[in-house]
Length: 362
Image (cartoon, rainbow, N blue to C red):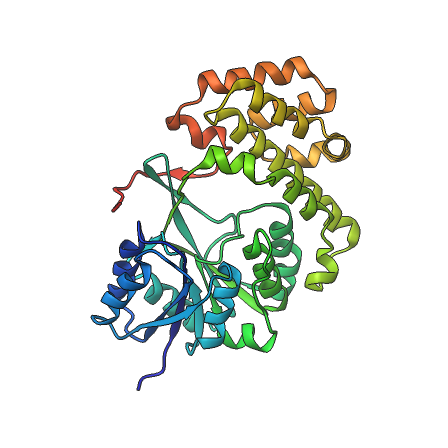
């Protein structure tokens, strides 16, 4: 049997709506020396039946069944089972181009690097937007650069959080016992751990992953899950100790603070534009914007927070620092009146994206 070059891990939980698109894109992969490890995480819909149907057609598909334990545990089970030289991930409601894993494997193996990072397409508002990484491509970055720039990015922004547009050397993951923690934004911690021990990494100018942002029950979930409290917990998380980082405590605190307030910007926008009563959303937004810790951090790091941000963020920061309830009221009212899906990318501060409409297979 030929050596497996890439193991692709796919956690599945009640994913029947989009699962066939995902599986078809994998069975069409031009790289034959692959294995596709589906972790059926206690699904009670037709997910397992769908995977088994395609397994009959493509022996590269492996199925592991387990009781529902969450995406992190499912991915960790997949890592243990993986036999490939490199490990990749895909979410069950996404899909990839036919040459995706062949392209990534050819580059990562040719340069013999621990990690390769590609661009991807973000599916939102019935279009796909090309999302490019912020680091220059076709350069092998050494450990010093990774520690100074890439680790800092992972603490400050969300550009590199995802694991599904990357390939990781399997030996690196196993030797350093890197796993997904069962916490919110587990991808960030996994990448911090992986990049922190990597000797080198490569960014390439290729886009083959199609991330489908599904908004089922968004309004309900925004009020059911306390995303602001989760953001606060991240602000107080000891990344230095947990990930064994070499950055100073002072620098880590600064980067965490920037991201915390950026998350506040995002939450204010999301609450302002969801379909619910104005009074309900305004009270929620006011609680977040005028939280004492938000105000304190906003004042201390205001210049850093606004770096590369847009008009919306600048306006929100001014309202927060001045604790202007009137200004916040007008902002929320304006967002409700002016919001439209065609301008949503700008409003979400995706100013650095190159927009390219693609036909969805959905």
